[in-house]
Length: 498
Image (cartoon, rainbow, N blue to C red; front, side):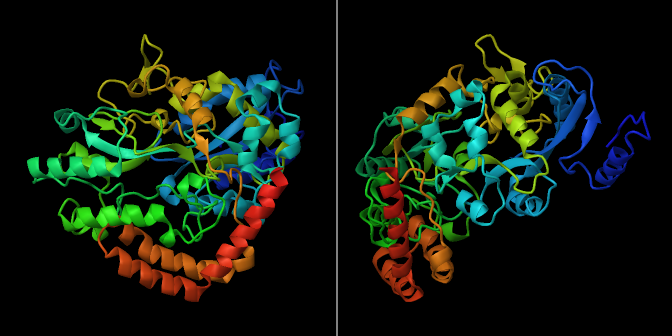
């Protein structure tokens, strides 16, 4: 960290702190103050620039992240008196690294991701933002309404701000576009599982050297379907029927789950699915692109695919924790939460900052098109352009005032907002299960679910006997205690909404 230190005596304490931060890299305490310039925009006029440490997950290497950070700070230091230290952390390391950051004050503002919001709150890791939201600017409140903020609230208090992405999903079959056309299937067409079966039979007969159905990822055909886990993804007690029932049930006894697994088993036995799926490491997209598979189940929003069409089996719907699954919060250990909140508002309302954070630097990381979209420079992709965040619009705080990628079309972000407004919500919207009263039973049952969930959804095991065995183990491990506790908490939550 380089500073131009001019008044040594007056800034001795700041210098000592800066030297300490430099020894630790880019993640320092939030009390750092820089000698600032002008006082335009939201700057206080004191000339001081406060540092906010901000951490965000990424899927691609970002060697140009520092350059983008500098461009952002040219705006925010002058306009708001805020300097961003941005840490780009690989998603594979996110859960571990973010939890380490939350043990101290080395991060102020960060994505809350891969850990349930209720867990962050229970652990005292994130600050209560209720009063901050109440006093937020009109521009900020136009992004997320009070009703939507229920999705990132716990026990009636706001602890995070949603980011912009599809909060719900269509569930359907992705198909190689050429083969889909050959069999008369169009993009967006609605299919039943019987329709899917008929297509797979014909496609398998015509193209026996390709898997008719590839796995969505890893070892199962799809990771989720029409059940709501009520804030946890081990599905130890669910609401079936797209969350439209308020009776918590054992997933393995729901019609939704049994029906899907029965179809999967049929296709596996008929050779339409790879027989070694339980050891597979390849996901559906490269398999279809490389002509190894014809189709794959997927959950998706409004983004497009090259060379494939998407069909609809289950119309768009969202689980209870859809808004909180990836959101942004303030570290409870932050030394300057007021400034961290100011930074939060900037990330959601300042278009120039949003464009830099989401898309990078024009001419280097993207080029503008006449229709309002952007493209990666010729010969470059998100993976090798140096800053591929445009492909990760669903990760950054707010991409709605930026440029969409060419593949998604000029109206993409408007379409995304419309999609979210029209998505069917689980009746338990905003509810998050607290496992504390049944911690031991939940741990034991989660291990059992992990043991049987994917094999059943892969079609690789007999449905009836495997579910019977799983249920015996779940019942012995205390599943009934968990379902009763989940139902109790859900009933209390629903009563509080009246």
